[in-house]
Image (tube, rainbow, N blue to C red):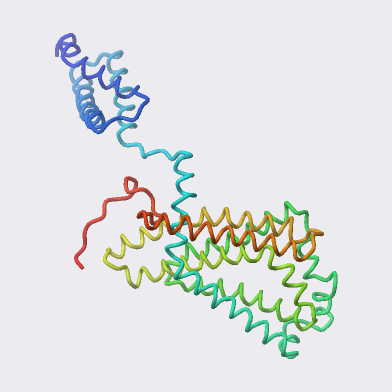
Length: 335
């Protein structure tokens, strides 16, 4: 191979590839196609050069050029703050709104279950005796007892972080293990409602239900809503395995799973807000009505966010899944 002739014949391609790689602005469709073609052509040139006329300087240049081009051609799209803003403004509320018919009934049935358990515990001394000895129950429910001091047992910041971690774990179980036909989701709901119902029942039996609700409602409204949303999403994910609709079971599960992962991120933010309220507002010296009002406002803001932005995003075609460009191609299936 005549190295000078080889360089003269192909230098224009290498220089053009270098120019496309240095370009800061987004490439047009034609430029993207040109980049791919020049990358393949330069890789071939490098192969010929290494086999026939190895030249250290030229080989080093083409090796660097091919590596950079390969990165530009094959690297995944980088996320940006714009993606985060779009997710919070459309993706997350759309995903929550789409599962409304799953998590809203879940919330109603779960609250009813907690109320029934509370009524059962409050009206049956035998059940209370199984839960704990009389002295232990008095210690838990008396003024300044365990139920009240629980929220101020640790520094506010530490307590908020602990609460956030525990709740995030419950939400993650609902979202991740929902694919197991929803069985772990039902178990998480049962445990949470049983704990809530026992507290309701014991404090009602002690004549201090108003105190218990004043402690639970400020953070509990938003916290339980996040758990119910995660549970409804997990149940939907489990049902997708049973009835994937017009999509293949694999494609349907992949799409709903990607949306569930996005939900986990959004719900982590919701639980962070709930944890801050539980750590700083619930044990504060504010009047009960003020603490409850803060919880009601936080819950109302979240529901309005979901209904207003979520409905608008769903009508615009948003599903909570990643962008179409980032999804694997789906193979059409027969109905």
